[in-house]
Image 1 (cartoon, rainbow, N blue to C red):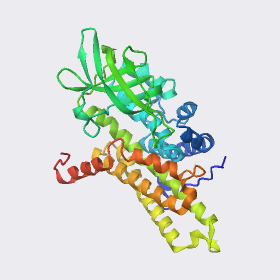
Image 2: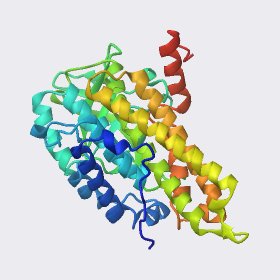
Image 3: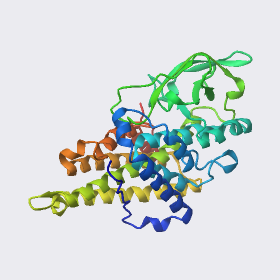
Image 4: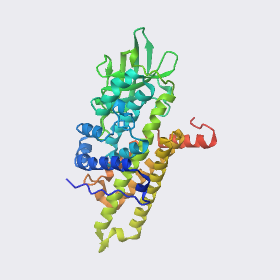
Length: 392
């Protein structure tokens, strides 16, 4: 088992933009990842198993709903602290960060924002502590980038709703205690429903044979005449804007998280370049490898500045969906390019589980697609700057 020697790059001294709480939160998450995630994550990825024992630690470092008010069990932190936690967790593994992102932004966020007080008090404290784990049901077999076309629906049966349909590519589904599910009512309006494990007709088959996010648990949500109590409807927002608001929070976290993956690949490649001797000198002393490393740290620094500013805007309530899309698209693309370049610096060793790079590269192939694909985010920016929607 190799020691975790990670040293975070900070080329523009961005730590000076962070307050003491930000640094404390980040450093706590960083130490936890070094102690609990790094030693086991390669085996978990090889075995395609989510390390369930990490849930308790994720809760303890505030990874579940860090910005949720303390009265509901959250840490009451700001958006930059949330981003820094996601950065550190994804430095360990994108799949583990996915579990935290889903719990925070796609389960706790809608219950907090769109739920009533009874729902908040019933679910949020247990989700914050990790006693309950949740998932988010939006994507369907035939509707990914076009979620408004969903066919999952519910009918009013007087004393309950009857839910039918299916969702797929759902992180946390196989072990989730609750699912925040988006479905159309009889008029075609989209609403959020809290579906609990154990409700008759609700099943969560696991998705196998993934080459990406192997240390994350992915599955389907199947609803076969599921009776959902009427008090489980999220009452305070409906329409497609409701799930998209959750995605804004999740995409923001991903923009930070991708930096963590990029940092880990860069740090691994930099250390290797100083140690690997070819033609009687370290490969880091050659122009070609220095070009790669200089470009990596440049792109990481640009992404750090982009997300820090976005975090300030989120704290001030000024960040737009389009700004979040820009950061998610840019940073994930940046991370995947750095992973590929870092793999080349390591040569053949880069494909082995002795180093984290190939695992990050495979994970990022999912991250660049989920929560809005690379191309869809490009079109969101295009629509924002031109005023024309070009999705179809």
